[in-house]
Image (cartoon, rainbow, N blue to C red; front, side, top):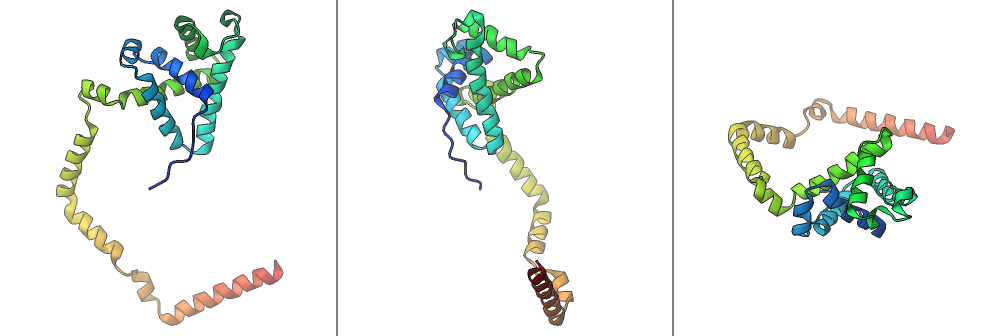
Length: 191
């Protein structure tokens, strides 16, 4: 099992995502149940699972999104997270509908990440009657019952000695090893 990387979300990014949650997803529910903090915590866990380059792209994009809002005359120098909600919504919408692919794709990507965290919340899963663990367990039992003979046969083949090595005699193993050693020595001497 892979280990999650040691990543802590920068505060400027956290502020931007907290402000974006009720804009990108059902505002009333996120506000009423105070879900934004949990969603951003889950987004941080998700980012820990990404390769460094992918994580860096999202971090840089989010910080750029946050800071670029201050460049708009209507923002009066405020970053995205400091804008009134309607202004923040208009700013996000400008990225969502942008003809610039980088801005548009960032808006889609960050909303998708937040949507994933939203739909993983236990209260949302319950409301939607979405119980993937029960389905996964049911299907696993059905597949095990259906394919148990094939699985057992495959496991046996994996544990069996390698048939090609048995077909090659011990003398052949020694000559293969000797020629590999001679080749390594030639490379080293001429290297």
